[in-house]
Length: 114
Image (cartoon, rainbow, N blue to C red):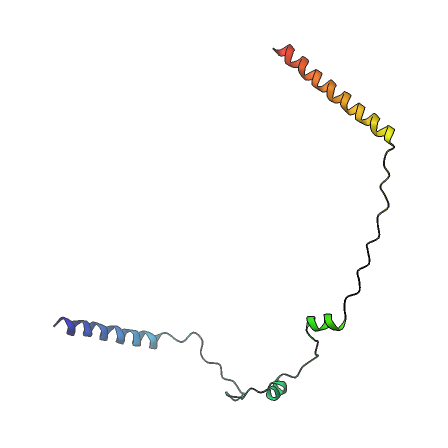
């Protein structure tokens, strides 16, 4: 008895699915084409259907045909003018003096507050 009930339920589902399929229109109906459906694809028939506009060989073939020219070294930039050594020493001394003065100021402020 149980088997018969299960079969009956399945039958109802199938009929519902069929009725639903009939009521819903197909999303993508087949588009009619004027060309015959089956064309044997050979190189000749393909070239007739799609004639080449212009042929350019693949990139690798171009490279082999035209080897790249040896790269020229880039022109060197003119040297940046630098300060003479005595001027560099002066600026170093000034920077050291300024740093020392700043550290002394910090110490004084710290002592004054404390």
